[in-house]
Image (cartoon, rainbow over all chains, first blue to last red; front, top):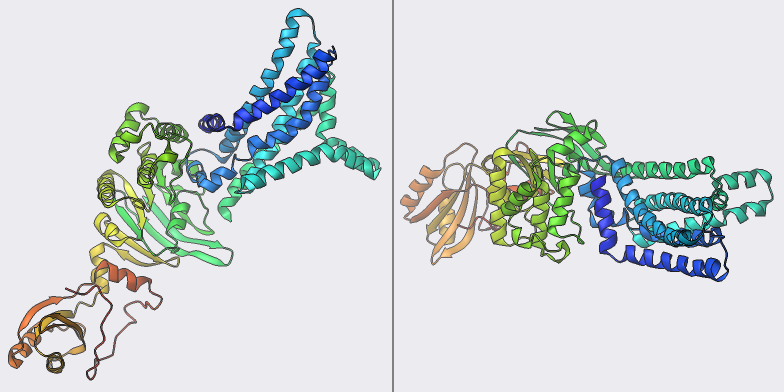
Length: 234
Length: 337
């Protein structure tokens, strides 16, 4: 698993993917930070992370699109699958490498808060709440993206499929409201990333939401592994 | 070392492998021979655990591929048909990665250096794999299979894309490896299998059609009573005379090979030695017999016969046609002296 994690991480930095992803995400973060916190003289950093939720949901699929589809296309999956490592190890290695890039990007977003912390006393609960929430939904969408990548040989299909899923997950709240049915709305609020994410931005630590996001990661990594297994039988 | 029992692989209604069984002793080099699409790669993919069988089982050194895949994978070095190389890595980085992935315990620096020397990739060690020529990529693929010194090597068409000099080098390398490894290699190039393998398995349309040493195969399939003779004199006359020889059941001419000298194929009834009668006939009729040899089929012919659609096992097949009149039919090439 560690060997795969290292190799994938290397390949992110050998290609422009990591740089473009980090560059774009950090640029957008910087822009909103400047607009909301600096220009507005606001301490409400949750608003900045709130906008980044949308952007990250859209950009994260770029990190996951190649994870399995590229291997399958170049037949390098033969080396991975015939090596004495478990399929689960392969999946987690790939997942963690994409997550590492995201984690690194998000760590950089903490720098402005620390700089401000030198001169005043920001609401740390809110800052870390936002940071943690970003990591959680990010991990969930990465796991979903890795799974979608394992379904296809084409990176484009994986990208579009994952972006589509992201958009669906973001729209699901308003879709639920359309029906006006209480049961549907309740079910939708279970699935909704947004509903799980928002409490964190106010500095509220919700264990059930943490469990929810981690479960999404575990479930999707599990079915990705099953998907790789099943390919042997087809 | 490798035990394959009743292996069947179906892709939908298409049967890629049909109840294939064989076993490979420790320390042998087994050649897997067959036309494209015969099921060679499928068999290898199943042995290495990349694919699963629809039926049947594979054990390597007593471990079942299905039940203990990790144990089996540790024992096998595999070079797939398309070497699984990451184009964005240098040879060094790639071998380091595979070393870690395979959890090799032999001291790293020395081990990788030895392998690089063995397959001669030391001079491209620091280069990006994507920029290497096909021959070098193939060799990096072989190097990868050798990592960890696995007791079983499975090489799917190992010499594809190499130049003649490299082919000879790789063949020698495989021969050397065969001394302390069990090697299974596939190929559709006959001289290769003939040169390297101690045992050949011919597979066609998912079924094993022959199994044995190269010599045995070519002996079994060739008719042991067919002679090739060069006789001076008029073709019609010679044929006329030869027909009078006892026990000749098939006769035809290959045409003029030297000025005034024709080559003939003479087949006798099973178990009958024609040479003395033939010699007697030639002296009697005053036809100088310039050359005489028994025709053993080359492996090439064996292969074509085994994999042709019309192939019927030898016990069933019996050519009953006796060349009649002045009609000569020339057999397809390969028998020319």
